[in-house]
Amino acid sequence: MPQLPGLVPYISPSDAVAAAEFYQRVFLATDVQPLMADDGKRYMHCQFTVNGGLVFMSDSFPEYGAPWVQPQGFNLHLNVDNAQEWWDRAIGAGCEVVMPLAKQFWGDIYGQLKDPFGITWAIGQATADSMT
Image (tube, rainbow, N blue to C red; front, side):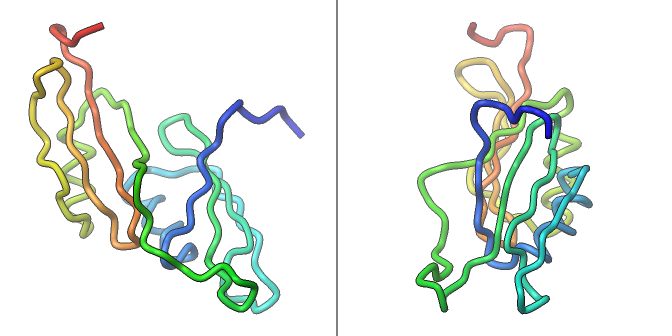
């Protein structure tokens, strides 16, 4: 097994199975590797790659003391070359705007949106006048 990167986000969307399909279509997730739970309906674990970064996720398991709760206090940040393209695809697929995509005071084009499964994504694009 290859060495994993030093930090991998592990998310619990409201429906990991549906989220995996959504992430493939909207955030161009690749290398999706699911492991089904014993019930055959939920993901015990799933890993995938988005824009070169590894993400782990699983469904919630209230029967084992891990109920689903609305995620908060973090976002998955995508650094991309064409923020508008990524933004439009996400909005068109049903993501909700949290912070509109716009050129920010630090120079980047940046915005945040929430996917239908409760996860907040940030989309950023560096510009020639971005602060370093």
